[in-house]
Length: 320
Image (tube, rainbow, N blue to C red; front, top):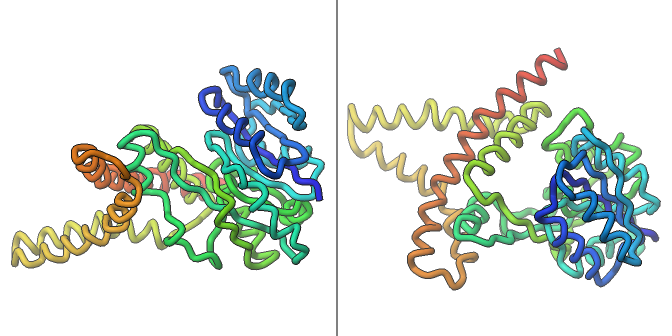
């Protein structure tokens, strides 16, 4: 069966070469690669076109200025010739066996609709290691039955994409979750391929991270996702924490034990992941990474609490 890899790009001239090189080094090469550029103002398109001219691998570049991620993916899939679509993102590099592992369930002859791959952090700095530990799950954190794959590492039948109406073009973030929900509702549980690995570099500054999580939460609000999860966050910061601090001040310092337990629960997973990532860090670098984790977590929570109501208001304005 022919396999088409699709990806959307936008101003990726600093990172696109890593993706292109890792595509060319796949143990199982795709039958074609389709890129959709959303209107880059740098030389991303020129890099892609120059690379395509040098490679025997069929690479097509479609420019769709102004297209969001959902629209770009739908354009790429519509243009793809293969009955199997493998999706990834710019800004990543692929393990050399990524595509082989991702499409293996389709080639085994079983009735498979969606195969979800995995992604692991690819940090370059102490801050990025701390970021990875704080926000990116390990394989041990996942339940393969309920895992919803990111579109940076997933494969599915083009016919299934068509049947569920494609990616939701009214969403600019969290679109892959809604697409996953549609596929799962229509076809049931996905196959999980943990060896189909994408190396994903996390955000390198707090400013970039804040913007990322603000946009994610705004997408949650637009799509009406995770109401309870967001409600718990607001209750924690604006009700439970002030109440416990008040009780600690007015009644007894022992109420601080509950705050301490909450802090431990909030950060223990991140610190455990950090021990798996810090490798040959010096003592100073380890302490630096440990110090970043609470700041990263709090920044992410603030970004989510600011972004979610903005998205929810958009939803209210457009669907009521």
